[in-house]
Length: 319
Image 1 (cartoon, rainbow, N blue to C red):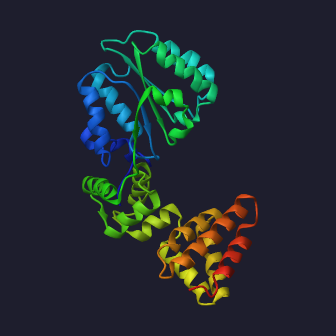
Image 2: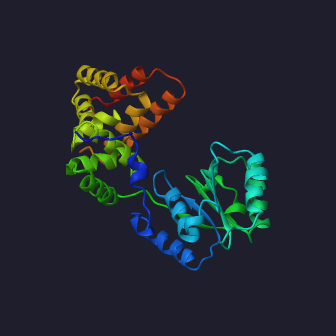
Image 3: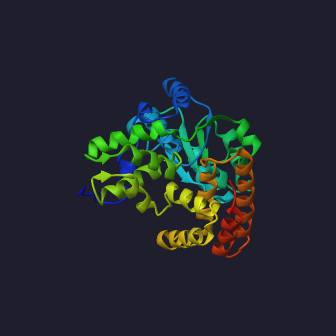
């Protein structure tokens, strides 16, 4: 049994400390590292999916630029919590207008900046202009389209990509070596599937598995995240294709109760596995179209199990 003091502590424990520690973003790292080495940089906009390294890179930039004084010259705000115009007018402006301590400029890091209101973004736009001599801004967001164009034009935009399976494998193997875990190749693939490249989620799930056993396999991963295994989804659909609707329906009910799944969880899993079925491309397109219709009904408030039953019924006889 692996003893862990607090769940989710690995996210901070294994947070990269240097540029070279961040995996999967080599081109971005090369350009940002050049800014740091020159001791100067423009305003930056980091855009990309969750867990791709945006916040980590912002912290590394501050630590490399300011050294021991990085706390005095770095302001981090989460725009999803403090998203109004008053935050920009008060906290940000008061920090940005004062001269940096033993550094050429300060850094304001606005995490999840796509949650800022439009008024707050307009105020931020003007603040970025006024105090560019004493302060640089780093904005991170999941969707750059939600950032107004005047802000984007003032920033060097870096688009982060989701990590690939090889990146997840590199991180998992490093953690497994240090924590003395045995992680099977199937578990690494499963971690990638459930996280979609989000390394934060990878570490949390891996740590949760490690509290149970130092042997981490595919079964353990899916039990921890309470998701359906791809094999189960495929088996359920194949029963429907074969005309065994009642068995398929019972299989669906059992999975939803066992894993406490919502209708949307199931429909997304079905949609994902349709592309792995050995059926014609034309049939796959029709099934995806049917999934989209059922998902719309679920979002509108229809009963999940009845709608999923209807979906399975439409699968009967399809090949």
